[in-house]
Image 1 (cartoon, rainbow, N blue to C red):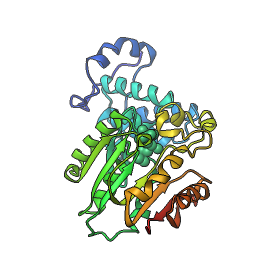
Image 2: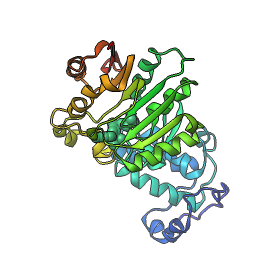
Image 3: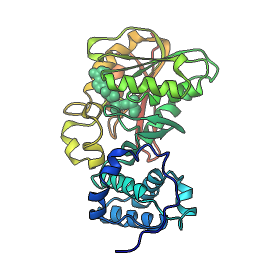
Length: 316
Ligand SMILES: C[S@@+](CC[C@H](N)C(=O)[O-])C[C@H]1O[C@@H](n2cnc3c(N)ncnc32)[C@H](O)[C@@H]1O
């Protein structure tokens, strides 16, 4: 066996290195000797992730090595020759095992960056997608930055859409609703951490039971994946995102059918809405909103060129 080199990176502040990890030392050592240097740990991680067919192996390895060793992504490269303490190696093994089981990096870390803000995730929150930033862009194009207005976020999850908007609109206030108590707890904690709690409230509610209120802007990213498509999704999505955040019935449009008729009642006169939609769903969602009496004012495409949002106004 290779002699273990002296550990020099102090991992004592890393919360993941608890008794549980230490208890596992013997088993893990039998399984695999922890790599000796940061570079070796990183290269080993890349090769194993690549071997498992994970396309983002390089980036994922850098993030996970950084997390286990308490280093930034840059430091993983600049500290390449530093030795890794055994406990940090074991911590890395745990993180890698989760990623090799196709758990997304954001779930392993318990956080995701969205609109350059950090959001904590939990079991019942969707992992926010970069595509959903299109909703924020579309909404910000509708309202002047200094206007006082009230916003409703339907199916708030981590609160990422509402809180991103509140971070850009200093005089706006907002309410996020979700059927999941876990999501409401997480969104509330995210608002606190981002310093937006005084302008955001989160309430557990099922939109099928009806909603009340009066809003100048309504945003929604409801579940819109057709039930039959779930099995064909990447395991990172199908197995780790909550089903209630994904499935929109047989054709993906169930939530829009419930929400569209409520919009003229919830929106102020001249109020606007931005609904995120799945690929190819914009015409059908626009039709549902128009049938409810709203005026469709446009759609907005995401970076891949897919029509990602339907935008409508209440002229009543
Ligand atoms: C696609 S996720 C969007 C989460 C978040 N807004 C985002 O963009 O990351 C849809 C959310 O709608 C919630 N939801 C699904 N059905 C609902 C219902 N009937 N009433 C209220 N919320 C619902 C889910 O719990 C989930 O958090």
